[in-house]
Amino acid sequence: MKRVFIHLVIVSMLISSCSFPTAQKAENITTDSSYRAVLDQVLSSGKLRVATDYGYVSYLIYRNEPIGYQFELLNKLSNFLNVELEISIEESLQKSKEKLDNGTIDLIGMGMFVNQERKKEFQFTNPILITRQVLVQRKPNFFEQINIFEDLDFSLFREPFNLRGKTIYIEKGSEFAKKLRQMASETNDSIIILEEDKDQEELIRAVANGEIDYTIADKHIALVNSLYYPVLDVKTPVSFPQRIAWACKLGETGLTDTINYWLDKFNQTLAAKALYNKYFKNIRPEKIAENKKSSIKKKGISPFDPTIKEAARMIGWDWRLLASMIYQESQFNPHARAWTGAYGLMQMMPITMEDLGIDENSPPEKQILAGAKYLGYIDRQFPEEIADSAERVKFTLAAYNSGYAHIFDARRLAGKYGKNPNVWEDNVDFFVLNLSDPFYYRDTAVYYGYFRGEETYKFVREIIDRYEEYKLEVGK
Image 1 (spheres, one colour):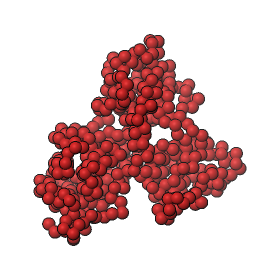
Image 2: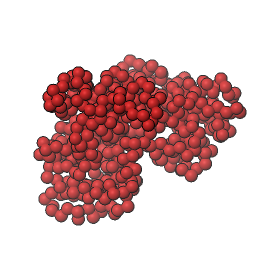
Image 3: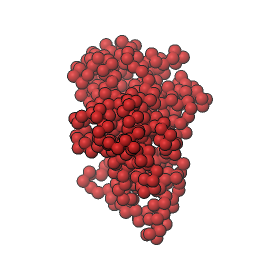
Image 4: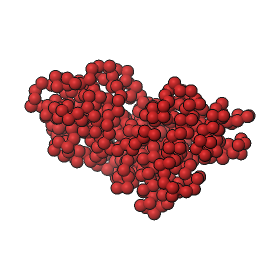
């Protein structure tokens, strides 16, 4: 099996960015050699070194493959430049600037707000996104029962000045506090502003879970999270549109001019729109099995039962367990496609499918057998000390969903913090759930960084629950 761990230094995948020529002649875009030292270094070394941070908007590992809006943009840029992409994770903007100034990296790909103060320190590219800050609030409890043509605005804040007397939690050190206080001063309103040592995604999650009522977030980050948490409303703007861009060393116009040339061309393509929709508009895969626990037919579970039984025998599973997993992934739709690119009955990622010798034209039977083969491969990655077969199933399911890199991280955390790394429930699953918490994903025991673990947690739980239902209603 041709699978390897993906480290934080990544070789650019072979993804075509668009139809215009590669940049083997990129040196012709900017001719003044005094401003092109970094560009020349990138082209001569064959490597674009970029610092970014964790998140679905920027970068993370999902099912053992890197994803993220900015990561995919950077990957397409590196293909245009005909160089490899080397990603390093750096949460601190100040440290990223130091690396930029001393030549350790070529570009900051964090998606920075462009303002006059920062223009004195960085050479910005053209915007990669136009965003604004929005109020994040919960929809009413009955929002799912409201007709889609009815207006929810009667129960939501649509004007910031209506927030008088309300408490808004915001990220500590962000610019939101200053703007909120200014807005409150201009409208003579009293808004209680509490700065928390949490990032935007943590605060958004707190709103979704009912722990707090309001926060302020960048619109593009709020949009991504609202796809995961339908209870959230992110439609109320509290700022003017703002530009988000990448940053080079001040005065280094050679690389920024080249990136701007590429951005102008790329943004005219359908690929640009598709990439934006992929991360900011598509429904997330965790909704596939929502509100539907099973698909039991009178004489079986699915149209593919004979193949599922054969595949289950290959890996020593109860076929009803494998059927429950396939339903969770695709509802037995052999043409199902997730926003990440995962495809088919088993929702495998493109590189995994290629490794297993299948593609989107493969019939359902081959999809199932290949998926079982991959499940067997994942199981073999876990040590023999996970001796209980039921526990191994849970770890294998979790790793299938998230990628085994994150599960190994969670096992190391469990061992470090006094939990049992060989037991899933109430042990390793706790750390999977918390891999989106900086306290844990920045821990030295974590090699693969940030991950939103709620989906994986639900994935394992719902498959096992459905399997118990199948056992009661369908014989072996």
